[in-house]
Amino acid sequence: MLPWFAALMTTAGLLLAGLAAYVGWRRGSRAGVALAVLLAAVAWWGLAYAFELSASDVASKTRWGDLKYLGVTILAPAWLVFVLQYTNRRPRVTPWFLAALAVEPVAVMTVLLVPATHDLVRFYPPDATGQALPVVGTGPVFWMHLAYANLMILVATCLFVVSMVRLSGTYRRMALVLVAAALLPWVFNLLHNFEVGWFAGIDLTPFAFTVTGGVLVWGLFRERLVRLSPLARGVIVENMSDGVFVLDAFGRVTDANPAGTRLLETSRPQLVGRSLADLLALASARDEPAGAFVTPFPLDSAHLQIWRDGADPARTHEVRREPLRDPRGRAAGHLVILRDVTERTRAEETLAQLLTERSRVAAALQQSLVPGELPLIPGMATVGRYEPAGDGHEIGGDFFDIFPLDEHAWGVVLGDVSGKGAEAAAVTALARYTLRALANPRHPPSRTLRDLNGRLLAATDLERHCTLVYALVRPDRGRVEITLSLAGHHPPLVSRHTGHVEPVGQVGTALGLLDEVELHDTQVVLEPGDLLCLFTDGLVEARQGKDLFGAERVAAILQRLHDRSLPEIAAELVDAPRRFHGPELADDLAVLLLRVRPVCVDAEPAG
Image 1: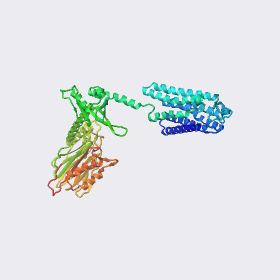
Image 2 (image 1 turned 180 degrees about the vertical axis):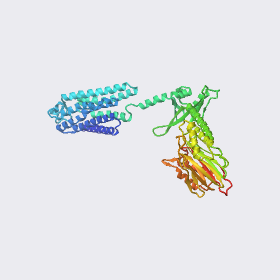
Image 3 (image 1 turned 135 degrees about the horizontal axis):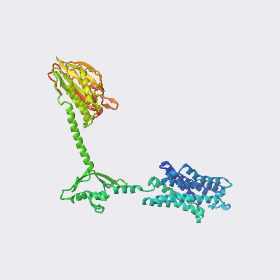
Image 4 (image 1 turned 30 degrees about the vertical axis):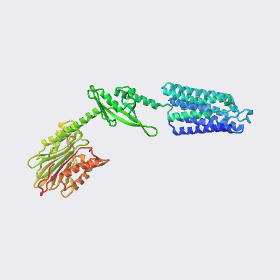
């Protein structure tokens, strides 16, 4: 029979060692570390005890019996540390506390290792030789250790039970399971130590701990010792404002939460076993003859509307339908959630209307800042294009204009006011119409822009600046003489009829910032077929990552399309940055093209 007991202890030791390794590998919490130490201690106890039972002589039995006390003395402190950490009393587990717990195990092992004091703990009696299961003698130190260890286990267990009982019934049930598992090895150990019956010769404590260790590991890593998930889910579902319905595979209601019963104005027993679609229809039919009804059916759409009598008859519900499957993955039913989204839907509709109206107002205001049809300049064709940034809800600050000054001179302006919105629009209108009033064919563009700068500084306290290019255009016998000045603006590009493209103008100071501005006049002559391209920074500063679209790409387009019509060139100048940056531009874009008509061409359409 003895080999069977040894095999039993070996099996228990290996199982507990495996559990300890699993817990140590998971390392889910500090309580898990304490549990790993506890399991390792019992595993060592069981394996050493197996060797003690298998030994053929008393000396070997004594040696292995002494070694098993490494696990025996560590067990109670490890259990106490585990309980303290699991019940959220971790601050008490300090290094000093752990050092104090280590005093008693070290003292017992020291007494065992010293031959003169060894028998104060345990010893084999003289008649043990030849006995298969001799009863081990015990000294006073053993009984002090037994009292100390059992007191520590009792305190830790009571502490755990008290902590759990103060909580919900779910914790109490699990506390009873844990206490029962912990008491099993405790009882076996007491029966052995007090030599009750045949337990006097065999200690089943390590084997009993396989049950306790299994419960602890399963509870800590699989069920977290308490099954809170069903409890939490139940509380959440019962208190949800959304209607929740559990349907079987045939669409019949098997359960519903209180919000669902209120939605259908009935009780839970009256719902069970009936079709949810039919219940919704019947609930609405109770409001007739007012014509209340539910639509659409079946419950496979994204939204469901319920009309009832009252001050707020129409309610919109968002429908969520999730399949329920059994452990084998087979369809078992559906979970239907009806969420009242009436206020959100109405807010979204109101917001959509506001955005539509805002876009309409923005488009109308922007159109007032850009001429709908450009006036004809003798001997020239003109095209202007404006594209708003983003979705067009904001009013931009880009503008252009062409206006006559006398019989032989025309004013051409293209500008960009910083920022967006109503303030930018106000500065844009001020700049455009003030420039018209100040423009004089006898004054160079730089003088006109200086006058405009003074008016902008005096007329507004808004922190807005304006960059623009202003040009005097004078057609003369098939050629066009242009004098232009740049107020902080990108230099325009001249595309010759030969395909050569070059920038013109010297950049000066933006308007609306300083009292004194530095401005320069530049003259350029356009021959028949030559083109002047004016643009805002929304064209050249379109980005693709860190890469700007740049004036080089604009020049490449003009060079490639120099023999095409102005509308074609303008369309490509607008589409190219969208392909480069994305569908929605980051900044407003304005382009103004002027081309001297070739002598052989009677007319080219103006934009």
